[in-house]
Amino acid sequence: MRDGFGPSALATPANAITAARLVAAPLMALLIVREGPGWAVCGVWFVLSSTDALDGFLARRHGATRSGAFLDPLADKICVLVAMVTLVAVGTWWWLPVGLIAGRELVQTALRSQLARRGVSVPATRLAKVKTLLQDLAVGAALLPWTAHRHALVQTILWAAVVLTLFTGAQYLRVGRRSAVVA
Image 1 (cartoon, one colour):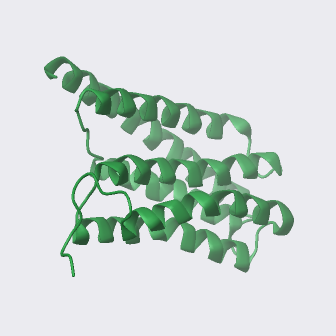
Image 2 (tube, rainbow, N blue to C red):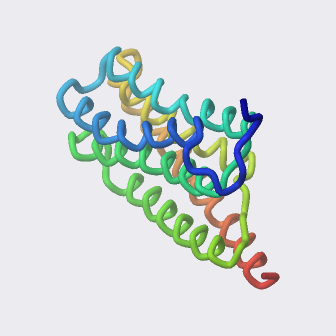
């Protein structure tokens, strides 16, 4: 049995979970539209968002790959944005906070791709991981029956996620520019 995977490996357990998350995102959207807030929808969201930690654990245990380093954060963004856009579509959220988050994520993904082509990797900071958690919590709060109808609470969590998303985006741009100059 092999102890780990090389950096160019594609077929890894971590990448399989990441791929499953990408496939599950549109199904999550359909569930939100058909069911609305509820225990089942919130449970599916919890599983979908918590598998990010599982694929990260597996990647560290079996060897991180270049494909995983690109696909994992992309899957995070797609899962969160699909859920958020769906919440806008069903009238739960206003488009502005979701648009700000989506804009930052698109810019950051484009920058990450550009830097990767130059061989530069900018790892996620702890604050960026907290940002992802806060985005996940905002979606979860909108879906959890106990909090779904507490609009002030859900909006507070969402706007806190917006602020942290924009702040970490500015940090990423600054680090990315410095890295691009060095490369």
